[in-house]
Picture 1 (cartoon, rainbow, N blue to C red):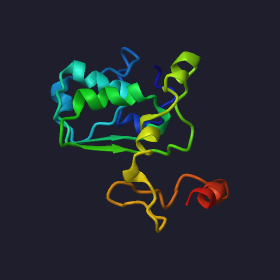
Picture 2 (cartoon, rainbow, N blue to C red):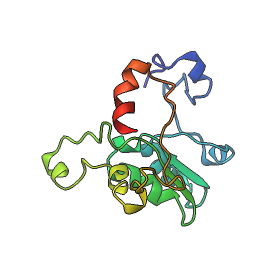
Picture 3 (spheres, rainbow, N blue to C red):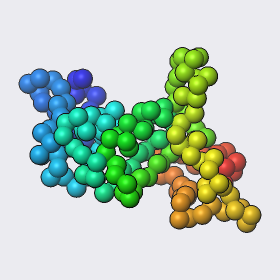
Length: 159
């Protein structure tokens, strides 16, 4: 991938190699020196093959989890998260779900994200007083990325 679409502000945090015109993975020894790693679910799963083990991370946070197919989300969880470690699935299961082009795959559930499926568990349901349990679910209260007119309808409908 070319770095042409990456702003200079972001480039200083990227591992872009101008010689090979690529974003190569750093050696595991170097990656393990960082407190926070940010990766796509596909790249995160590759960390296991690179030498990371279950338990190397105290927490895993998967953002936009409602947009990814369940196997894509489960790969890094299964490879890298040990029992007792924290997992945060972030996203909106009511927004755009996984893009699945295969009718066969859709028929067998791949159009439903892990986040959407998990949200059907009783622990995530609204209580009789119309609130969620804050120990397991937090709703976005303030959206800093959208114009108020754009988010007015979802705010009225889903809050």
